[in-house]
Length: 211
Image: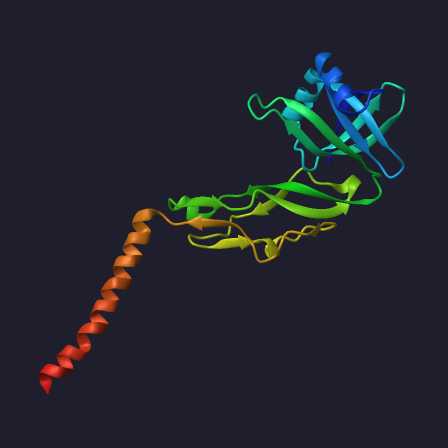
């Protein structure tokens, strides 16, 4: 786990008017939530955009440096964006204690090469991140899943993930990924099944002719 530093300023003006003023000044308004108080903040558009280019909103630990000299660790709870330009409009951070457990979303990373892929199959990924609970200081950058044993038409489920120190909260029966066979292999298998089915259907006719 690594942390990313971000410099923020406190906001005296709260509400919609304060948010509009921050945006006029080229800053993005936001709130840092904590058990003791909710702190109105703002950050320069350039600073926030730079941070968001390099971190995931799900599991990135931020080292928040406030202009009053204070500092704290936080997670990105939500980033609201302009629906047309995609530019950040508002942010929600949540204060964390590094020795306490937190619930975060961690991206999945596949390790190794599947024999099914080597034979021409492809990876069909259904889930790209897992919802997990762990101590904040042990939040992983990603959850690595070994696929080097998977053949065509084999899958990995959430229940197959076992990483020390992490409790997976995503439903265990869900499929994370499947190795999909080559199309011609699927067609060949279907053709073989059809041929076998046809042979079984012919047997009674032969018996009937004997009688």
